[in-house]
Length: 431
Image (cartoon, rainbow, N blue to C red; front, side, top):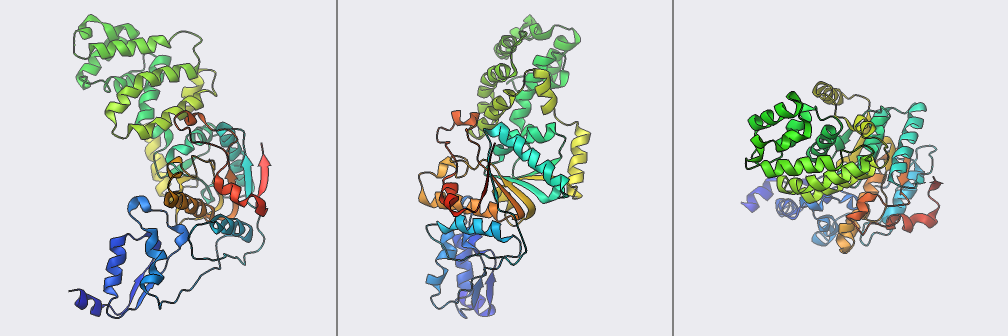
């Protein structure tokens, strides 16, 4: 069968070879085994999908598999200006293993990439929004501006800042912060704390409790809202004797603990998160991945003096607005793009921001102790930087966010930035 199939295919061509897994590569090799006419196209510096099974060794070992192969290096870049390419060349220059190439451009002009050093993650969000407004004022279309990051939750603070500023955006590679189920749950707790007559929020909260279904939830809400009993209804004798009575009592205690006048949003979020976290761990198999979002919410709350203001900025869109937003996005509406780096591969924008360029974020702390993983993180940075056509901004907050409580490995500026500091490829702005 192998011989027949191989004879039937005189020429075999494979694109994006750096993204193939071992089985796919072997299929290509076997198809080419008779005529040995195989051409593969790929960029070793963009091999970033090991979590999907892609094997970096496929492209690196191709010359060993076919010792007589001809290697053609394509170095002229038609997307980016030379200052951006000088940076990307510097990023990949320190790769442990690579096919050496120096990208160059004949595009005219070009600004040096800008290195931002905001005081913290909140200041980073403020600065990015300021720069976006400046770019828009200079005539750059919103859809030609992208903010890239290593993990979906890294954009949480920025999403809030964009929403506060009335700047529309679309997100690739994960849900928007306030669209995540666990954030909706926690916001529902905050909403009933602010307004105990919020029946919609109560309904969501009550359905989180084991044993409470739609009918029971409506009965409880009828006493809370309809009869005006407030939090006291949670421990009414009618419900106290049921199997979920203890959980309702715990919910009342948690709400009353932070329901006193003068309680700060940060205190309220922290206390309600302590109540909610065991529920989240029971409800979601990937609860450990959702913890970072909860920590982000605490940090966001720290910038508000009233619960009303916090909820105003985080309030979810009504369903009809959300549907309209999705329709607009599919119609190519002009809006800022937020994207994980993995989801940005193959795309390009006039202006690109790469945020959270600190150790523990990019590279991820999970890659610190494994050389192959750390090298893939370097390639991620390279892929992100090569998305920019004319403007590139690199942001490394001076202090770690509140999430560092859950991740002690978060440190200073990315080690990849340290490698290129002496190359004078950046315009540095400290703020």
